[in-house]
Image (cartoon, rainbow, N blue to C red; front, side):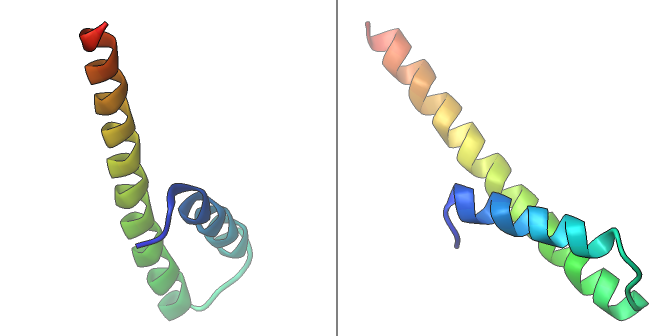
Amino acid sequence: MMDFEKSMARLQEISERMSGELALEESMKLYTEAVELTKQCREYINAAKLTIEQLEAAE
């Protein structure tokens, strides 16, 4: 699993590639990868949010 910054960079690359013309198979492959990366990024953000909430509650 990539770290957050690498995942976001890869999502940007995918977005740029998908804005051009691609074969359906390649588009589906990239879309599937993007969905998985988006899930990973969401998990990173949720974990960070939880950590911040826990730290704030401990004050």
